[in-house]
Image (cartoon, helix red, strand yellow):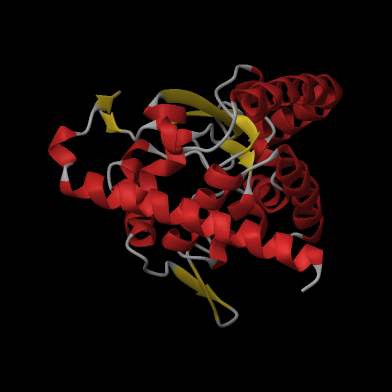
Length: 261
């Protein structure tokens, strides 16, 4: 066997062992739910299961901070133009602020460019989220089953372009600068989504949510929720700065090709 094949096999075995350990802990907690602690009214899991060093977390934070700072400095004029276009396209404040669930189950205010009408009802998304978390498809387009609406009636004309190019996510650089988010990590969840999580799903809350991540690059609207969680568990247990850099670069390619949703 070639040395590189042997190393890849060993790494794969290590990852499988980590996932098995997570699943075993999740099963135990499922049986002992009454004994689990709470924080911000959201059940969380012990961070000891994450096999990362404090040094890697510290370096990731420094990297996030300076990239977000430089990104905001360079993109500020462009973001002002986007805000003006959003405001001219439909009435309402151009920045959409919404409470999301962050690391450890702590709530924070997440910022995006508004892509929907300001008077939109969230019942549509609540129903879609319930279906998604139960493994049901939400829509279909060109014969492809989707786990997200192909045409959301609440989205504005400019909003459709912002979502297709992921430019609506740019204000989240402020969240990264403030330490509430990372450049790379699981998608930030809503409280009513987390309320439906089983314990295995809550391991997504052990790290900071990200502007981009494995799901955003490889999954998006074509994978179900359990696959999304498995992708995030891979990142939680085996994430590295090299993986972060790879996912950031691939995000630009995905956005450029406008693949997925």
